[in-house]
Amino acid sequence: MTETETRAGFVALIGEPNAGKSTLLNRMVGAKVSIVTHKVQTTRARIRGIAIEGQSQIVFVDTPGIFRPRRRLDRSMVAAAWGGASDADIILLLIEAHRGLTDGGKAIIESLKALDSRTPVALIINKIDRVKAEVLLALSQKLNETYPFAQTFMISAEKGYGCDDLATWLAAEVPAGPWLYPEDQIADLPMRMIAAEITREKLTLRLHEEIPYQLTVETEAWEEKKDGSARVDQIVYVARPGHKGIVLGKGGETIKAVGQAARAELEEFMGRRIHLFLQVKVRENWLDEAERYNEMGLDFRDGDG
Image 1: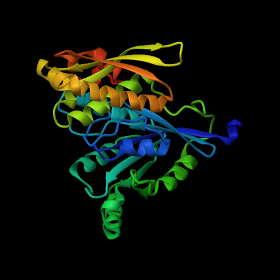
Image 2 (image 1 turned 90 degrees about the horizontal axis):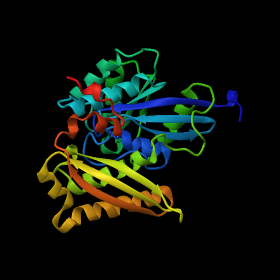
Image 3 (image 1 turned 180 degrees about the vertical axis):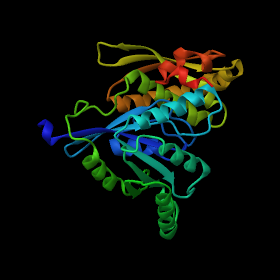
Image 4 (image 1 turned 120 degrees about the vertical axis):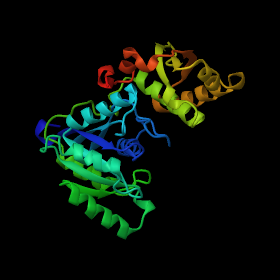
């Protein structure tokens, strides 16, 4: 495979929280590399997933949802989102079909106008199975009147509708040049961080509305065993003493169930045996510790108000 035959580039996924960015990333890559839950703002770091389409390597950057930030963590997440967009070769703006053009969507479009105008932006109207065709067409027309989108795609990331056409277009649009990653690599995150994200997803799903934004997970140690398995030690940091009991559950049943679910997914993802050990620790100020942000792939300084 020669350089002249190949293409490669970065594609940033931006939009409001829960617009379907992580679901689209996982659909395009064909594997689960980004945390997907029904809670908003679950993607904290810029997670890169890598897809191959013909002779093109498409590196997707799944950014945190763009929203009105209130805390340091929120501000760092929004800064990461715009950082991912400004560094990309192509930007995909995801809008939920059934929500239409919200105030948040309008604000994102206004911010897009301030970015480098040479970066093409495609409009992705997602969750099209939730609305009628005439509503979709009217929404597409309205959105295209607000910004000069390079292309418009109507898709269902969850069901896969329209995703093949999007992949074909992206493959032709990314810059000509050598591939950026090995052919068999699907993400540029270290396994330690992917493992932490998997555990955090299981906690988020299990705890629902209780404390997900007040906790983080770090992979403290990763030990390769002679039999091909690995021992993985993780710490769940919570912000308050009362949260520790919620995460542990009665008789430790919650953390045990989370550990079992995370281990099963890790084993499936890696194709080998994993011994996962979880601890829960209280760090009341973890939301203001630079080290915690570094572990999440965020810049602590971006949270300065």
